[in-house]
Length: 85
Image 1 (cartoon, one colour):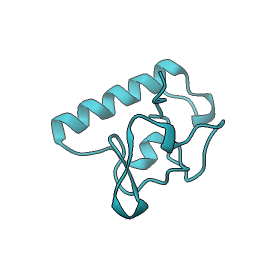
Image 2: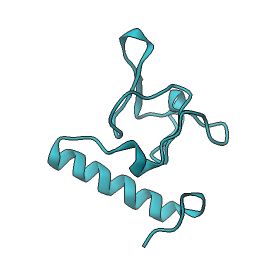
Image 3: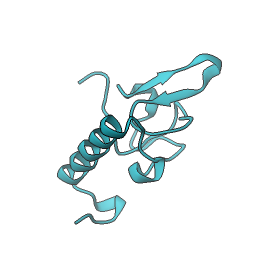
Image 4: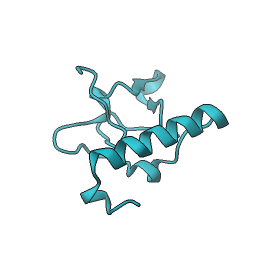
């Protein structure tokens, strides 16, 4: 169903985001970073710091509404959704 991370279509990305969000709501858990190809650096100028799913907690550690664990403000994953749109 899905292709490699570098060739994933917008439809496939949205499908994964919807599946993970549904799973998170039903199971009250977050998705694994690997499921969303999380990386510690930005991609194409996009980073967690400008994503609507990201928030900075006390101590400068970031958290995401979608993926589990600590998230770098400079990181990126395929659940990225710009705050400005």
